[in-house]
Length: 168
Image (cartoon, rainbow, N blue to C red; front, top):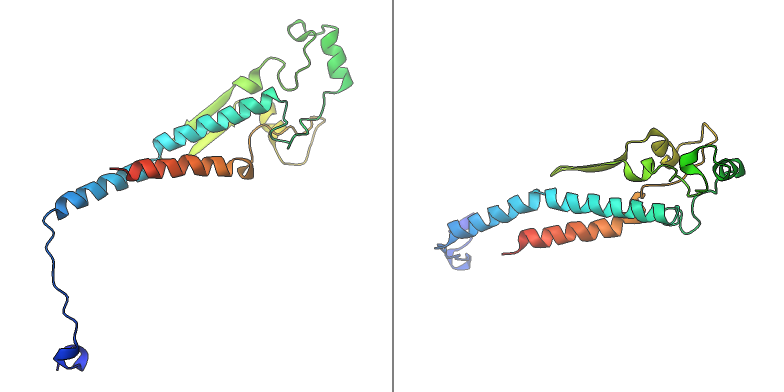
């Protein structure tokens, strides 16, 4: 009897093949795996994309984040105060969330091989962007993208990373 009690003539014979370049193939696979695991460059690209999205959102006063409707208009009292020059640095300016440029220009861009973060360094920017119920007269003005708004673009960035890591 052969394997598992079967007659020998019914057993499959699998020849052993020795790979002469197995070490080279293994080394190549290990390099690819290492490149695939290191997402530092992909994460840097993702952070740059999100920052670009945020800047476009500011230029359009929220039309990107709010699906074309834009941020809630400024209160008439805010506009009147600027036109009358109560604050000389803002006299005549009516761009929403861009009085001094602090929210627009003060972003922390953090990325490591494992994660990314883009965060406003201005507390009131975080409050405006928050989906939490309002606890003051400041309206919600979405600044950073929500996952569903950038998922496709980020998938493209990480797909490209995988393709580059697996080349050669």
